Length: 125
Image (cartoon, rainbow, N blue to C red):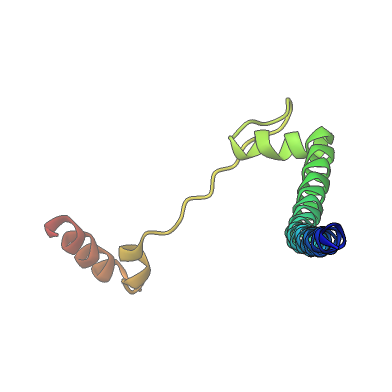
């Protein structure tokens, strides 16, 4: 009889330990699954961010390729050189001066006396 009670007690202890172990393993698996799910969401966000960055870099790359294409054209360099004041052989450079403000605002003299007075006024200034 003592042996039977002892076996029953051992069976209960084994059952309790077994159930406790199953609960611990299930809890560990649930926790691991939650962590993996959280990490997956973070990685998906990072993937979307990197896709957007790739798209931006591809647009920038296309713009740079277009710019390289423009620079390779002779007309681009000719325009840049002309902006610096150079000319082709056989051409004549023409410089157009802007009219000064003081000359714009003064009335144009009609006769010789008005011209004379305007010149004296300009000298006295």
